[in-house]
Amino acid sequence: MKQMTRKLGRRRLGAASAAGLMFGGAMCARAQQKVSPITLVINQSPWFGGFKNLVEIYEKESGNKVELDVNPFAGSLEKQRNSVRSSRGQYDLLILNSGWFAEMYVGGFVEAIADIDPGFKLDPGIYTLADTCYFNPADKSMNARGKLYTMPVNPNIPLLYYRGDLYKQAGLQPPKTFDQLYDNAKKLHQPPRMLGIVQRGARGPHTVAYDFYPYLYGHGGSIFRNQDAGDHTVVLNDAKGRAALDYYLKLAKDAGHPKTAAMDQADLIQNMVTNRTAHVMMVIAAWSQMDDPTKSAVVDKVELAVPPAQPGFRSSPALGHFLAGVSKNVPDDRKRAAVEFLRWFQTAAAQIKLAEVGGVPVHKAAYEHPMSQERRYRWMKPMAEGLPNAVNIYNFPESAEVIAVLELGLNQAIAGEVASAAALNSMADRIHKIMAEKGYKTGKI
Image (tube, rainbow, N blue to C red):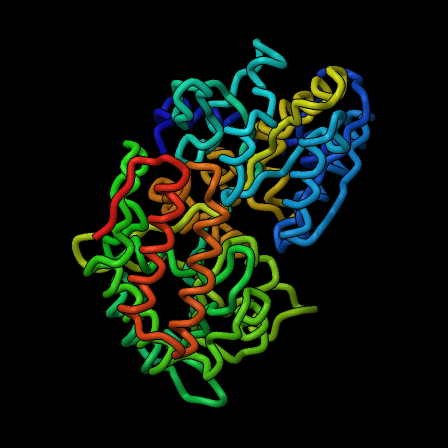
């Protein structure tokens, strides 16, 4: 994170946040004016419930209307692509995932917030998530020197979920390295009653690839040599990439689910809440189900930590975040109405309320608030630790094509259809071909 809040600023944010909650939390923020109704397209996901609850608070407090068009993950992308390419868009506010926001930026489909309202300022407490909310159309870069294009709405990163009660019984410590994670998972692996870990291996729109990133980057690997500097030389199949994939496969074989290649996110959640696994690595969006007594058999037993990393490398959770962008092909009054909602959404008070109603905030004030010390908010500390090191995996519009290559290749390796080295070389070759055909500076090893 390039925006850092100084201690004085933090004290002021904390004071403002506390003041926002003094009146029962209901008056979390006031919309500035009455505006046109807007339609927002969003995906159905574990974090949707908290967001929906906050939208309802906004509607009640402001009198403004926000219609939610809720879809499956892939369906949301399809609807957004269709809408932005129409003569007049169906959706005013687009909830963009990390896998496709670059496509919307580079394609010119999103109107910069700074152009709709030049006076709009991003709250200094908002996590900018590797500065992905900024974009410069001239050189297609994403950094704070560009215009504010979108508003972060969900800072989705993966964390290590582990059974604190089992750790205590076995005298284990939360793993800092992947070797330690392997040892802990192996020790707690007692199939079929208890699995050491359940990993995602199923092929999907952005499934096994996303869950592999913390392992790849935590071993010092990468897909490209330095994409931020414009160097898209493919290094996925170097020694670090090989070590990461071999580790992923070994962990699955020795301490994992017997059908890892078929596991998707819902399976990871299900295995954890039904007391079948000691570990999963998955996004914070799934956290709310862990302590829900109507869904979980492990209430108050699950703890969280940042993803491990091998010695000499840092924990590197991959950004699977969501940004809210205003569609360019909608009427001006609806653009202004969308910005008005974002103005309210980014306030410290609204973000603290978001945490209270089951969401994951994007404002530092929530993570520095006294609430973060409460047992039910024990996820906040590892989130605050992980967010500054979160990695933006893709900054180019063809990311979906690269993801598709990774989804197939990784799934085949996990299923045992292809050896790890062959899988990595095949994926690297195909990714290199994509980047070369699109005119990027690239190469392969």
